Amino acid sequence: MDKVQHVVDQLYRNHFGKMVATLLYCSRDIDPDTAEDIVHDSFSEALVQWRLKGIPLNTNGWIYTVCRNKALNKIKKDKHLTFNSSEESHEGADLKFSESLIDDYQLKLLFACANPALAPKTQVVITLKYVVNLKIEAIASVLGMTIDGVDKVLARARQKIKNESILLEEPNVDAWMPRVPVVHKVIYLIFNEGYKSSSGKEIIRKELCEEALILNKALLDSDIGTKETAALHSLMLFNCSRFDSRFDTHGDIVELEKQDRSLWNKDLIALGHEFLRRSEDINLTSYHFEASIAYVHCIAADFKSTNWKLISKLYERLLERHPNPFVELNYAIALYYSGNKKKAFDILHQLRQHSYMSEYFILNSALGKFYYLDRDYSLSKKFFTIALKQTQSKAEKKLIERHILAVESEGKTNAA
Image: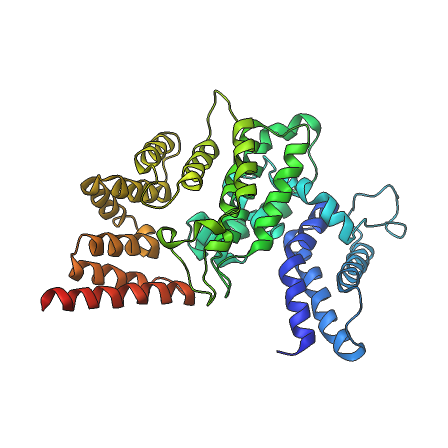
């Protein structure tokens, strides 16, 4: 890959979705397909021009300016398009389309995409697509959907926005609060995608985690931040505190039981605890429970002394309020380590009847590990082998392969 292609790819990865979302935000009638075409054309022009004239010093400014100009040309060509502008004529129209606008308005764009004219799932999908710029595969992964399912949601959303001229604009003051739960969910999904990337070579994408924290802090500092916002912030900080221990010097995954806890960031844990304290409320949300679970992990001296019974109780209460197969998987894992192995295995095998979960490598990997710990090496190898085929991540494959080697070694030793 040449240098120009590399720079454009990085720029595309970081800004494509935001540029599309801003065009939708600025225009009352422009549809998502047209917005995407304009942005695609801007990046294509960058490839051509930068190879001819060299890479500009301010690549961000260049691409935003070109995109803005292409959008204005589109306005002049299609007289029926009306952009939000104080000017009455297209000739005098001015798109406030700049890098600083995107940065300042990203939280507003999140609220804009949480338009009640769209179904809740659609709100989340279009935000992840157009504001966060996640790939279709990543959206499918974080939402537990199929790629075809995400494509269909996006297609219906584009058509609805176009047919009904839905404006993805900042809501009035009274309309902000009802949209907060959707914004929370999207920020949570942004963080999770960064914490465990579903695509690409990197398992951790710290820039997404940082973006989620910045967005949530902006929400906290506004007049509409809630106790739930504080709980979400706490959860993200607890998870961030463990970043440096998740991989060894060779880039290999280090599982929780083997992590060097001296590498856990005590300042972030303390800050997370402060936000957890601030989040105290009579109405507990899923973020309160998840943050509490993360805190129990953070304060444990080591894996063995972790209060797994408390964690399993917290997961149980979370399931009562938020039934979810992913939560159920974590509940089963906590049950196993708390000593309730039979119930753990029952839940894990029940989850394998779920069409999506049966293809989820973490579920089969958990079964492989637990059968290994119970010295059933035949079943352990079976489930680890299934899990190996279900992930495309090289780091995850390497981890599972290490487990399989350990199973085979133990099996031979016991057979002898």
